[in-house]
Length: 408
Image (cartoon, rainbow, N blue to C red; front, top):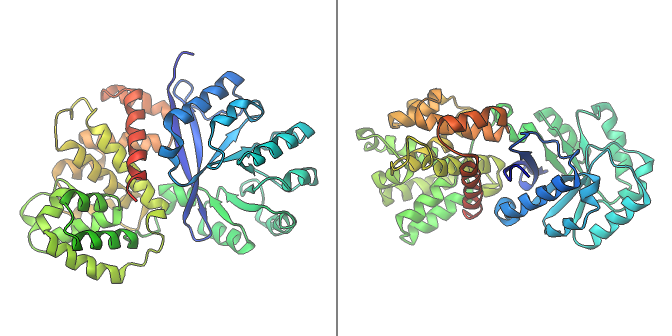
């Protein structure tokens, strides 16, 4: 095979409380830069399995489950046993024909610990035998008009399945499906920054409590820094606090560690005590937006040491991390990037990256956004311009996923 490079994307799947419970794993070949796994040959499907195991399911999924689309050849192949059944939800594509062999295979997979889902599905009596076996039915809101959803839900409720609404793109659609009794949700409303502009970030109550405990135990500064870095809301409010206590405006802040050092433990402890009373986020580390911010920041931090112009600059990884985590505030929540930069006394290179995606840090931010959008047609040439290989980018992505998993 010409190339062993494969990219992995993840789209969050949430429960009725908007808590992260699983991911759909999306595969992209670095050669074709497409997601056309459905037409993969047996050999290509085997490579997909090897790619997943080389990434490491524990590293990518943590404690959550992963949904995987499989075409018929791979579904029927013994290589599927390479996957950890207790963490994998196998999605049966809508193109699969219901045959005795398929039904028998699904029963076998269930007996061996796998969960099963019907993908892009609309109710039909021909699937009754599968409805008794599968765990989840995914309903594509773009294919199933809202007027028919209630009757469809009524039909499905005769079977022991959870209903997952996919391609949820608005608050209206989310409310409709939740009121109809859907159990799980997936779509750009939750995962695409442009759609989430109306949601304001709250700091994580779990992170606040952890920070308070660390301060009470006189934890080392690197442990305090780790907790703050793991939460975009905490990072932003910490930087705001630096400016409000009268010391921050004397110097440009380059990193989270710098901000912690400037403030000192006592000021941070007082802030946490007050903030705990004001925190309204009950999801804590399970908020998928916390996930997005943390992974982007960790990815940029790892990528900084590989950039042709940033190699050897010991401040670059920290600055890249800060740029990544603050960039989410402008894209996802009700605060413009001009407002973010205007209120924070950031170093000039961080400011330029956030406002106009300029400079080396801006280039790293551009790479992160292209990877999140799976825009590999643009990503490949741009990586060449800044001297980063596909292999180095993949390694940085894996390290970011691994770091995020270890934050809890």
